[in-house]
Length: 60
Image (cartoon, rainbow, N blue to C red; front, side, top):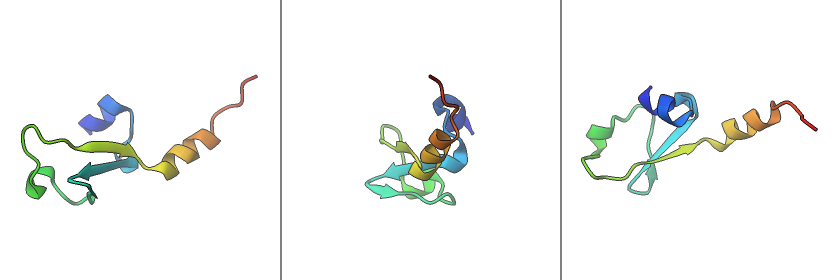
């Protein structure tokens, strides 16, 4: 929830990468070894991004 507020990317749209692997929704970060100073990459699922772009109003 906190990541969604800060990033503007809803939880269902988020993809997290840690140690080069995409992590599953059911995995807790501390259980996969994420610790202080580690880098976790947040990506937006491309299918959601495309869907949002298709629904933008057309402005001229």
